Length: 358
Ligand code: PMP
Image (cartoon, rainbow, N blue to C red; front, side):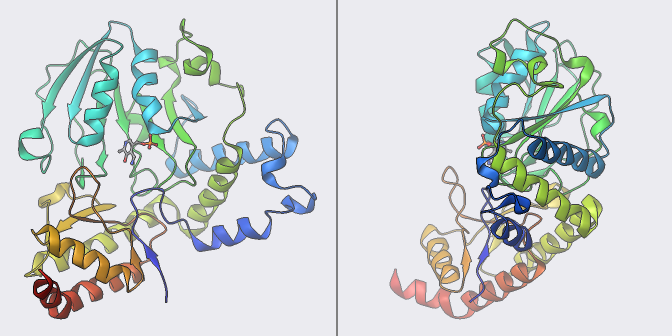
């Protein structure tokens, strides 16, 4: 039975990349040593980091005005590093569009005054907040471009004169992003880039100021130098994943595929009498699709029904419940076709079974 993994992260990686990694795990490029045994300062490993950065720059069209940093601590550490490093006035503006924005806001409060300049909490984050322009004296305006848990995405950016900072953890490389519109972009790697343990920060160089901060937490200490031992295995796999994205047609092709996959699932959800999507309109995410039957017991019964058929990790985030399908780059269209088939089958047979059981 083919297994399709709909996890929100760590999530499915391209099978061909996993195969490549397996093939050369014991002896990287016939050197007799594994990639995980190699110094991060060896010529071979430096070649990997250079290729990784070059690929990301090509794929996202990142100019030399920006530095690319490969860090650890996930996207979560950036919730703190951003306010620490971008602090000039000590005022930070945030749009509150979901669970991850809320966490970013809570962490930023340790380093200055946070103005929440728009919030969609009252709609349970089914909508996106409007920006009314009252954050213009802040050091930056932060937004979560794709809300992984709530399944919404920005298609229009707020009109602002201050640097835009965006969390792109769940949509980097899944849809095109115009880097030149941002001061800083950041993402945890474990969805569209590679294994967990790695995060990427793309920062406009003029925003990097050498601050009086502990070395690891200071962006300036990571530019043009390798400060400490990075997540070598994750970087190696990430380089292979980015090679796959380039071979497959780049971000434009990823976006085309993600649009096709998500459109299939939304079309089904919109026509279903049992399941429904929680988000409507053009703010629907291309990568994270929450849905529900409206009853916890039936949601759980469907999750089990799907698992028995090889469709795994369809549970919603523990904070919101329900169901969610994450359709990142490595999820093939066949996975979504199969999911729709299984949902249809559940509507016909499993739903009755779950009702009899209640
Ligand atoms: N931001 C977003 C949008 C996310 O989806 C996640 C994790 N799923 C995070 C931040 C937190 O990332 P990490 O676990 O890498 O710290």
